[in-house]
Length: 362
Image 1 (tube, rainbow, N blue to C red):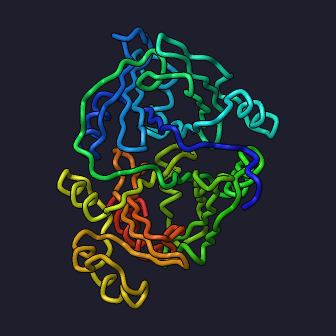
Image 2: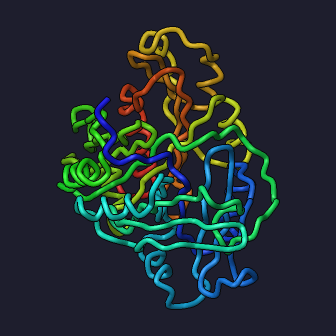
Image 3: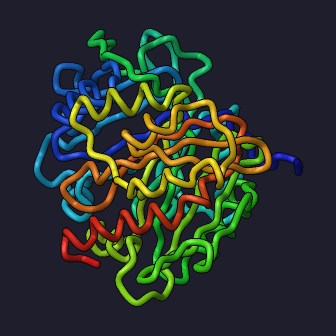
């Protein structure tokens, strides 16, 4: 692996801008099994916005909402609906990360600042990426509080479903912009292009898209970037861009080590997943070889399987979880495989097209 020119420890948290942070936190707690561990709002002295912190193993989500009309957050939510606004990184040195990113061509979102309370201090800064998405840089080595200074600890346990961490986050960008953002991640954050998919890899009879998977120097952070490609009908990327109002995060992949358990729990709690035809499973072992799981059980749940040189993976995708056909989640279980399920693209995209047809947007 090449030298890591922009050290990132991990994804620290993913912040959503939402209309109703309390309701969103309740949804993620009772559906996805997160525990509410931190709160910031009027009672803690925040006059303009409210934030709920949710945790499950190594994954932290933050739900943020404006408290007053005219808050800048409100304009963005009006444009995009509820959306992923910040994929935040934990770094060794926030000042260095920020200055280096700007020197390499990034645009500032938040200048370096120090957040402090009686439990210590957190260094913070942020840069802009595609659309209204940002990447925060955080270092909380000198902090022992619940999330950030000013937040109070909460103890509202969820019933966890085995989600371990973020596997990858996928961005949708406008036609012709994919390679621009690929270059941006290479130049600014020292990422490298792990895999590329063109419209021959990702297409059906009607729609197509192109995608490049970018990976941080240490391989811990992976960001596929998609753009639409010409097809007979409107692709899922075109649909996303239209309803979202520009470029943004399309889906977040959550890693589990027991996908049957995780997906069974989510279905029981009312989460809707994309379905592939049962014929997909008739030739599954011909395509991917022997697997540990019961194929009948996978078929019942709609879980897809793909194999690469290093092993296999199991994956499934939710339908959009917002009113707009924008943000959705992937549940992924890796058994050695480092890839992204190329063998499932056609079945998956046809499933998405069936949903688009129901929405009248294909």
